[in-house]
Image: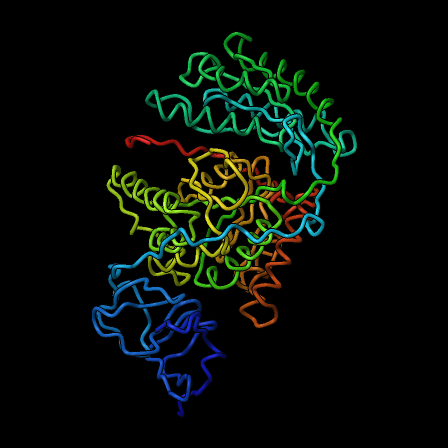
Length: 515
């Protein structure tokens, strides 16, 4: 039987001219002759979708490149062979970092060209994309009561017809606040909860303690008191109220009052400069860094040109690409902060006997991401090309407009809330495998990296960046589509995660490593 011959462009793609691997767009059968630049490359084994194969012989010690950057070192790979974890070393050659002092500020659009969205104005001058009443347990010890109050309030009181300007009543159940050391874990918990109360997507908040936990109302006072100047905040103690039923009854009375207050807010036109976008990826595949991430990055650049703000996190997933972000830093000090953020996280995971090289996840590997470096090279694309203004701590507010890196983990359930706590009123989230996560108070817009996952999970995903891979649209066209969708969702259009009732919330607390 004659072996199949096909042009490389039909079955695979080469991302950068300096790359020595190609990425399979479809499954390629063993024995296929791939024609590229007049050469015939015989594929020696089946190449699954999203996986890479060598387009040159890669003798031992040869850097393996994608995106024009080395992501691994060959242990000996022949042309046409698949790139697998067994055939590579994660060791990377030394990389020179260009001086960061040459980076110019963003090229802002003229004011008259900046679009608007419809937001809720708060007393501190910030604007919300949503309008929630929040029920906040200070610890896991009061989580059940908080959930019962929020759920009953939505059944008994709230409806879109009765309160058209309110998006709902939301609880923040979590497993933190007690049974942990005093100090950083408790402070992280209280800071995170206070950021959610302060958030412009929240109109009013009820805070509930058990009464004897470490993260109690007394410890919370230094965070709560300044917030009361901005919005209604009331507190309850389960032990003082007389137990669960009494607390739920009293809590429902308070939430009923808050719903009336929250319904007095109305959307009004606001400049895109007032929007803070969090950018995230989860359930990534080999196409995430080729389609969805650069398209989201294009949208991020548009927002920054509108004088808006973008926050990227997942520091362990910039490992291997931190030098590229450092080259984009505002100045040498910010470049230093970027390297220090990665070094800190390496130290942090080391306390628990782990290493950053243990990432990616099994799903990432199955999707073609053989190591953290190639994952990171694609992951940073979601932050666009704008210069990095600074590095902020987990749940900390950016001090100015522009692009910021936030310290934080790669776990979606902790890093997404971290972005929201840092002020993001909306999140752009790319996925190649299909991630369904949402957020308790902020809309999370999902961007699929490939058409197959979009078609299978179209009730969970908002935008199909796989059209780039299919050759039907460009990165810039999908990026503009994402930007327009973000403004529509910010103005009230529900995203798929909201329609499916996703209200995830978790807190990342740090133990064992000084900040």
